[in-house]
Length: 159
Image 1: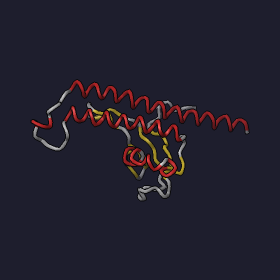
Image 2 (image 1 turned 120 degrees about the vertical axis):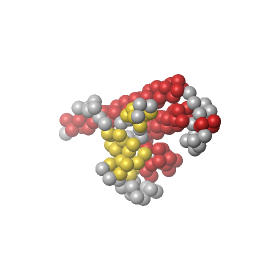
Image 3 (image 1 turned 90 degrees about the horizontal axis):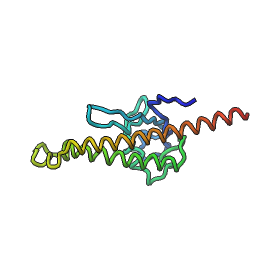
Image 4 (image 1 turned 120 degrees about the horizontal axis):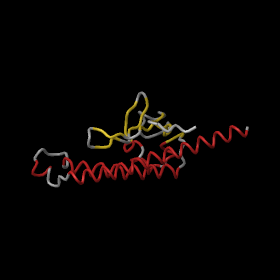
């Protein structure tokens, strides 16, 4: 039976030869997105009880290597992983854009430059779009896991 209140989902086990050798062989869990500090979406957190890192640095930035070089085991198909990565790419772009309209480039405290295009309405719009992407991403991941669980149940009944 599907868990409709999932807060974490197993992404897979990193390949023992994964180029980030300090985390090679680790199981990774993806944490569901949350609305934080009353202005932004926190998302992309992956890890386990001994590790906290981010989807973009571990997975998204290594997609060119191929998923078989990243994971030794994952419940997702290659096509599903590409969809997940595409939605994360959209999400990270929206998050960065919202931050620019909120705070500027985060490099200088000189408001003549950092507040050049400050626009609270744009921040609200981008965060609304980001919520749409993140909700769709989580729904897609849950659907993939639910289908896998149903398939396993059917196979178990047939034995």
